[in-house]
Length: 155
Image (cartoon, rainbow, N blue to C red; front, side, top):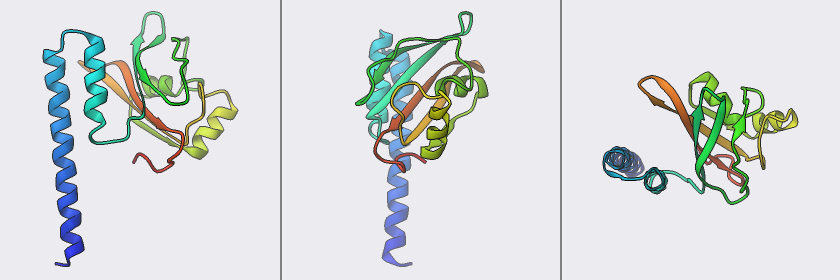
């Protein structure tokens, strides 16, 4: 087997091990961290080992009030993470993840199209990825990352 292929497999194995360790660290933090603020920070810090989380947020869903709260966020372009009320799939990327109940990866063209129809809050990233948080099968929130500079940052 050529040297290059061995290196690719080694890199993939190392990355898989890092992801496994990250998931373990997050699960451990859920069981040992005494405050939500500390837990959010540890999740962010853990994920930073395996992906770019420069622009990262956690949104929590209040289903009764149909409101999204942002208790934790880090973003180099946006500092307005006020709650989103009465969201739907057309006016909020985070709302889209909540309502579809699936992970979403949106790239530049989709984001620009949504932005032209007021479907993006804040500065328009070149790539956005959101994943629903579920507890016992119920959506409780969303974890999302975005980049304003690297359109190939996430896959």
